[in-house]
Figure 1: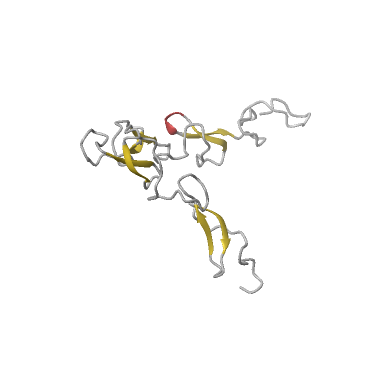
Figure 2: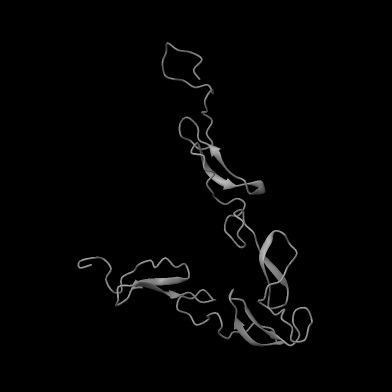
Length: 180
């Protein structure tokens, strides 16, 4: 649009959490640099590229779909020669509190903690903020059993305050008593 703010080279947000340094290109398309497996925008450590998993018993080390650097073992993680249980492949760590379990470079089967929203590796953990959907509470956090609860907002608008309905107060009128 003539006179608009989408000028080539100006910052924008392409809406993709996997990119950074987003700018408008010559075609006025907002695009960013892909963030690689090491967290570097525009970096070269991309999925499918070579890396070093630090395991002398593996070869052909590459970053997998979940950015785990893993090579092919002569014997897989279960001891099967040429078997499919290679680092970076799915497994079951037998922990019901984890998901997206995968073999690590050292063949340990590890899953990501399932958060309060049911997302493996998610951010909705105990003690983190949430919204309990109650407009009469504030400072909502996930508590025990992943229940989202807030503190009551009192009559003066203070979160967790003590001026609740029915509590003693002073209405400022000398002609009244036992204010509540």
